[in-house]
Length: 336
Image (cartoon, rainbow, N blue to C red; front, side, top):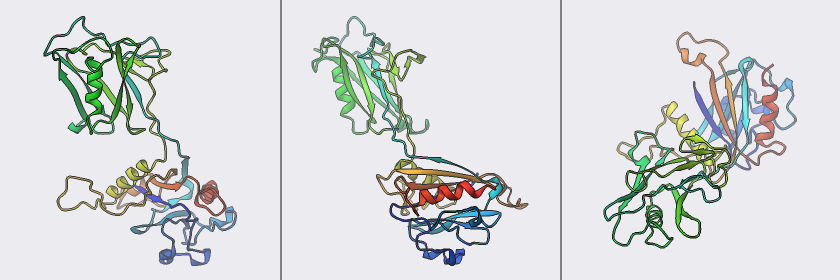
C-alpha cells in the first residue's frame, strides 16, 4: 500500500494562499506552508471559502496536496468511487502502571519472598521496553544486586531489599518507568511501576534469585491470567491518537516509502535529518483516506492496490475556512 502524509499548521486555513481561480498544480508554490487543499481531476481547487456543495467536485478523481517545509507534495490520484476515509480526533495517551508483588489497594499478588536471605543472594528484575523491537538489545534493562550484610526482608528502611531495588531502578538514566515501593505500613510488599512516557508500554519480569516467585500484576491480569477486580493500582497502557510523536513516526515511515531517508554517509543516530513538519507539543486530528487510482496500470501493479493518504490537522482548526471544517465538508461529498 502506498502511503503519503500531509501535516497542516495551526492558523493556516484550508488552501491558504490559493483561490479557485488559481487552479492547477503549476500554481502550487502559492500555497502557504502548512496549507492543505483538494484538487479535482482537471486540477481546479475544491473551493472551501464557502460551504462545499456537490457541484464543487467536478471530476471522477481527486488529489490531496499540501505545502510543507520541504516543498509542495501531492498525493496519488484517488478515484472518487473507491474513496473512503476515517477521522480520529486527538485522544491523550495513558501511562501504564504495573506491579511486581502486592497490589496495595486490592488483595492480589505477593512478592513470595523466601523465609530468609544470605549474603551473595541475587535480588533483581528486568524491564522490557515494548516500543523497541525484540532484536534491539537495549530494550531489556536488568536491575540486580547481591545481598550484603545488614540487608533485610522486612521493614521499609533503606536496608530493605525492595527499597534498595527501587533506588537502583530510579537511579538508571535509561529506565523507561519510575518505581515506587508498595507497603502496608510495616513491610515493603511490592513495587509499582509507572511508564515515564504515556503510551510507551513495558513489561516486567522477576529474575532468578530472591524475587524469582514474585507475582506480576498488569491491568486485569495476574501472572498472565485475567483477574476480576484487578483495577485499583494497575492501569492499562493507552497509546492515544494524534500525538506529535505519532505524527513524526508516520512522517518518517512515509519518507522511507518514498525513498527519502535523508541518511547521512556515516551515522548511528537518527536517520531523518530533513526538517520535519511536526510541531512539538501539537495535538492532531488525523484523517486516513483510502482509494485506488482511476485506471489500472499494466506496468506498475502496486498503484492498483488501495492507497493510503494521512492528513494530520492541529486539533483546534475547526472554525469556518479552517482545514478540519472544510475537509469534513469535502470528504462527505467525495464518493458519489
